[in-house]
Amino acid sequence: MATDSLEPAGVYFGTSGGSLFASANEGEDWSEIAQHLPTILSVETMVVGE
Image (cartoon, rainbow, N blue to C red; front, side, top):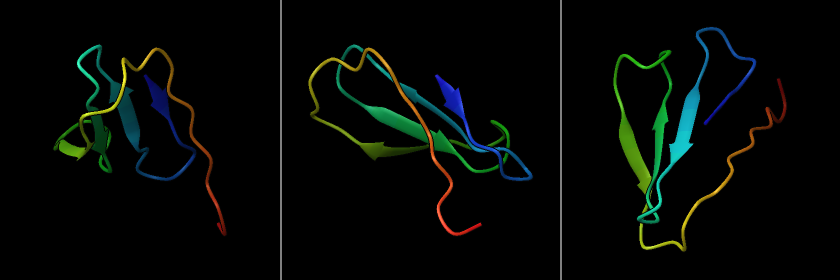
Protein backbone atom coordinates (compact mmCIF):
# COMPACT_ATOMS: atom_id res chain seq x y z
CA MET A 1 0.00 0.00 0.00
CA ALA A 2 1.17 3.53 -0.71
CA THR A 3 -0.13 7.11 -0.49
CA ASP A 4 0.72 10.23 -2.47
CA SER A 5 1.35 13.77 -1.23
CA LEU A 6 -1.79 15.36 -2.70
CA GLU A 7 -4.66 16.84 -0.69
CA PRO A 8 -6.80 14.81 -0.28
CA ALA A 9 -4.30 11.97 -0.33
CA GLY A 10 -4.48 9.25 -2.95
CA VAL A 11 -4.21 5.70 -1.64
CA TYR A 12 -3.09 2.73 -3.74
CA PHE A 13 -2.78 -1.00 -3.08
CA GLY A 14 -1.98 -4.11 -5.04
CA THR A 15 -3.19 -7.66 -4.54
CA SER A 16 -1.68 -11.11 -4.81
CA GLY A 17 -4.21 -11.74 -7.59
CA GLY A 18 -2.62 -9.02 -9.75
CA SER A 19 -5.11 -6.18 -9.34
CA LEU A 20 -4.18 -2.59 -8.53
CA PHE A 21 -6.71 -0.38 -6.74
CA ALA A 22 -6.69 3.41 -6.25
CA SER A 23 -8.60 5.97 -4.23
CA ALA A 24 -8.27 9.69 -4.98
CA ASN A 25 -10.13 10.69 -1.80
CA GLU A 26 -8.30 9.09 1.12
CA GLY A 27 -10.08 5.74 0.80
CA GLU A 28 -13.69 6.91 0.54
CA ASP A 29 -14.13 5.45 -2.97
CA TRP A 30 -12.04 2.82 -4.79
CA SER A 31 -11.42 1.93 -8.44
CA GLU A 32 -9.58 -1.01 -9.94
CA ILE A 33 -7.03 0.67 -12.22
CA ALA A 34 -5.17 -2.43 -13.44
CA GLN A 35 -5.80 -6.16 -13.51
CA HIS A 36 -4.21 -9.39 -14.73
CA LEU A 37 -0.76 -8.33 -13.48
CA PRO A 38 1.66 -10.68 -11.75
CA THR A 39 1.47 -10.78 -7.96
CA ILE A 40 1.98 -7.23 -6.64
CA LEU A 41 4.41 -7.17 -3.75
CA SER A 42 5.03 -3.42 -3.51
CA VAL A 43 3.40 -0.15 -4.59
CA GLU A 44 5.13 3.25 -4.84
CA THR A 45 3.79 6.67 -5.81
CA MET A 46 5.14 9.83 -7.39
CA VAL A 47 3.39 13.15 -8.01
CA VAL A 48 4.37 14.65 -11.36
CA GLY A 49 3.84 18.33 -12.15
CA GLU A 50 2.44 19.45 -8.82
